[in-house]
Image (tube, rainbow over all chains, first blue to last red; front, side):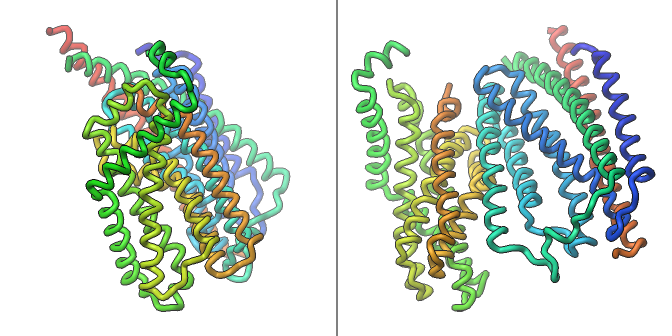
Length: 232
Length: 236
Length: 50
């Protein structure tokens, strides 16, 4: 394994700095929201985590297609890295969203389309990891993984649409207000700046983690190949 | 390999169709002899209904709301049982390898297996529906419901056949199929349950139509996707 | 309007979870990397012996 390239080292340092600045901006720069006050601050990192999860989802789908077209093990490693990162960040988004929902909507969980779709996406990705665990042959594992990511990438948007269809016909009502209206708020320009800064920071963090995870995948591939050679 | 294919393809379409037909015929004939798949699916389906009966205390009031959900949960569970078994048999008897050696397009195998799986699922549904109607004194003979069941089963089997041919090739093949299949067929279950309950409650067609459209879209997209990627799943 | 004391508690819980899960993931990346390195080393030594 080659030593870490300088660019990756620099990116790691920049990511840490960006993360700390984003955290600082959330607590010291962004103003307090009127009705929800402190708890609204979860919003900035909640949305940034969901954004990274989304990036990972797209990257996984692209890597899956590229693997099926090119048959190069490299794309399998990229796909696994994307799925894993997406899994972790969507998990954070779901939990932080639930904690925010408790005081604003009165319940940790609502069967709201985005929330439910994120949870189903997590199930797809867990199934993906279990599938990989069940296959020893690296080539077959890569093929099946790519096929399953592809099927998941098509089904998840359809799932979102079908839940939304179901919810618009039967709106969810919590207490006296609908969930769509409670918890929405007008953003001041300082809030917008904080949100975009958090989104930018997490995009850089995504790239850094993705790169690290791909390198780890390459190392794992090397180890696996050596093990297979030993067995023969 | 390529030469073989070309010599065999005098009439590509009829060759393709006869290959699909051969796979379907083989499955149906084997099932007619043993009846092991259908009997297992049926008994399982009835047991699921029995469990729901005690789990939900199905008095007439609850029944009206819960029937579509119970039906689709039953079909989904019995469906995975059938899909898994039908592919595992293929794998264990080496039929799959034999089929793969035959000079036909591999998607013919996919369509053949899909059609026979669909046939098994529909047979189970055709038996479960009247039994459920009798047990719960509910009239389920509704043309709309039949269309929904047909569309839902097509989509379920289209994805299920692809994923079950993957699942049987893994080490954990007994448990893999439902884990892979359920998260990606959720749109079918949502749309089918909603459309079924719409028809059973006698809603106007425009109110049910969005769900029917969703089912059709899902069926078309996933049949096409599975057809395109099936080669990668059986490649050796 | 939400009471400040309640709101602060949920905010801290939220950021606590975000930071913890992120930290756990980065730690797991580190430990997996280290164990892979170790595996690689053992495998290389094993090959040299043969």
